[in-house]
Length: 164
Image 1 (cartoon, helix red, strand yellow):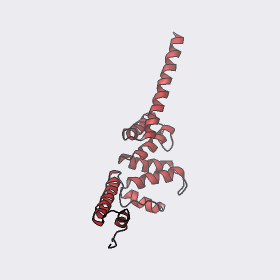
Image 2 (cartoon, rainbow, N blue to C red):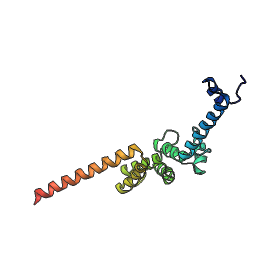
Image 3 (cartoon, helix red, strand yellow):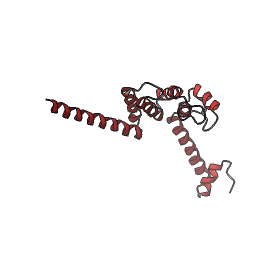
Image 4 (tube, rainbow, N blue to C red):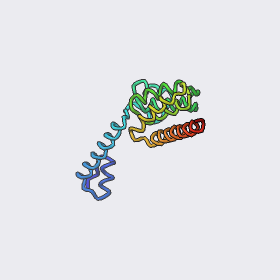
């Protein structure tokens, strides 16, 4: 049997798949991964790991993933000095591109008043956008806030009933 030129087709061939079918399966796998990457909004220019400068270059070119990473870097203060205003700036850029994790992180900063003026409405806006995309942590946060608000309204109603 002739040795297949691509490692992925060799993998399928070792599974006793005919070489022609192995090539088709490998191509399908590669196309599937590419479609997933595009669907997730990933860009070829974004670094998976790298220096602050690498992330800055990619973020400035519009990579939402790099913008999210920069937000994390400035929020955590590990690679660069903590700068919550910069974190907000980069999270907002990624959030505006529809990245659910960035929307959630931005919501947290508004909820806690870190890097921005505390604003429950703005926090709920960003949590809601992330939740609309199926982001589970955001769904839980919206429910948690809703439960607190409802609980607070019930307590207010009881207090008003006592006054009357």
